Length: 563
Image 1 (cartoon, one colour):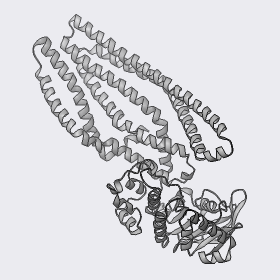
Image 2 (image 1 turned 120 degrees about the vertical axis):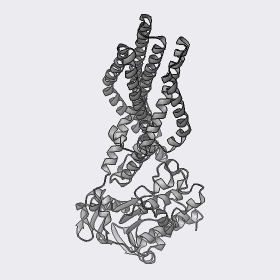
Image 3 (image 1 turned 30 degrees about the vertical axis):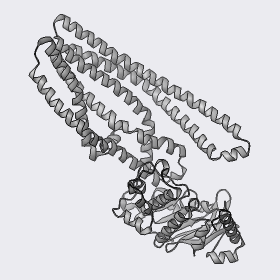
Image 4 (image 1 turned 180 degrees about the horizontal axis):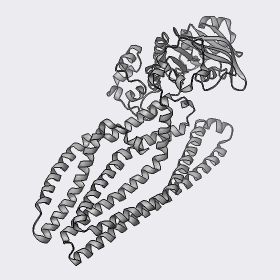
C-alpha cells in the first residue's frame, strides 16, 4: 500500500526533495542560531563552523520561502493526488459493477478519501525524511559530545513503537466499525430523503425517524470508540516522547555538573534532540490520521485493480462491432418482453419506447451483462454469444448513460477526459456542438464543476456526461432517458450529437420524450410483452398503445405551457 502511494506522481517527485531540504534546513537554522548564541553568551566566542552554517542556512531558507508557493501549487502532493484520482475515476467509470456501487460509499467515502490522502504526500513522507535527517545529525553530534545520553531518545522511540503496535489491531477494528456505521446511516438518510414524499404519504415517517435515530446512536457510539482510541494513542505518544525529553534534559544537566559537557554543547544537543522528538510527536499524530484512512485507501486500490484493463492487443474495443442481435424472453423471474429477432446496427439511432415497467431498462441491463435472458441469447456480430465475452472486455466496448449524471469535483476538462487522451478532443466536441457553453465561461474547460456539477445547470451537466461517453470511443452506446429531465434546448443539442455518432456506432436510445420520438425513423415500442417496429407516423396510426403514449406526452407539454 505505502509502496503504491509512493509510486504516484513520479514526474513531480523532485519538488518534494526541494521542499524537504528547505523545511529541514530552516528547522535546523533555529538549532544553529541557538547553539551559536549559547557559545557567545557563555564563552564570548562563536565557532566559525556555526557561523558558516548559519549563513548557508539563511540563504537556502530565504530561497525556499520565495519558491515554496510555486512548488506547493504544482508539487508532488498535487501530482500524486491527481494521479490517484485519475486511476480511481477511470476504474470507476469503466468497471462493470459501476451501476451497482453503493452511492453513499462513492459520495461520502471514496471522494473524501481522495482529498484526505494528500496528507501522505505533503506531510507524512516529508516528515519521515526530515526525521531521518535529524536523527542522523543527532547520532553524529551525540556520538562526539555525549554518546550515552543519545540512547535515551532512542529508548523513548522504541517504547512508542511497541505501545502503538499493541494498539494497532484495536485501531483497525475500531476504524472499520466507524466506517461501516457512517455508511449505514448515510445510506439510510439518502434513501429515505429521496423517498420522503412516499414515506409521508404512507404514514411511515415516524418509523423512519426511529430507524434513523437508532443508526445515529450507533454512529455516535462508534465515533466515541474512535475518539477513545485516539486519546489512548496520544497518551502513549506523550508518555514516551515527553518522558524521553525529560530524562534527556536531566542527563544533560548531570553531564554539565560533572564537567563532561559545556553549557553551549548541552544547549545545542538538547535543542536538536527536543526538536527531533517533538517532530516524532507530530508524525505520530499525522500517522494516526493516515492509518484511520487506510481502510478507505485500500478500497480505492481495490476498485483500481478491478478496473485494470488487459493489454491493448486483446482489447475488443479496438475491433468494430457491426451487429448485435437479441432473441428470446427478457425479464427477471417472469418475462417482461419477448423478442423473436431484433438486430441492432450502426447507421441511425435505434429508438426504444414503451410504458413504465414494460421492460426497456431490462433490455439495457441485458445488453450491459447485468442480467441474462430468461430464455434466449444475445449475439455479437452474428457468431459470438455475449455470454462468452467477459464482462470486463464487454465494458470496454459499450457505454451506458442514464438520466442521472455523475460528475466529480474538478474541472470540466478533468470530467470529460476520464478515458480519452486524444489531443483533438476539443475539435471532436466542437464538431458535435457539445459543451460549447464553455466559451461563455471565463475559465472555459478549466471551470470547476462543484460537487456533482453543482455549479452547472442540469442540461450542462448532461452535456458533459454525454460528451464524456462519446469521447470514450466505445462501439456501442445505450442512452437511457438522457434527454428526459433537462430543458428542450440542451435536449435537442444532445439528440443531434447522438444522431451524428449513430452513423458509425451502434446507438440505442431509450426515450419517451415526444421531440425525440418524432425524429426517429427506426423506432421500437414494447407493448403487451412484444416488440413492435415502425416510424413515428406509422406507430401512431397503427398502434393504439403508442397513440395513447403520445397523447399523454402532448397533454403534459400543454399543461406545462410548452406546446
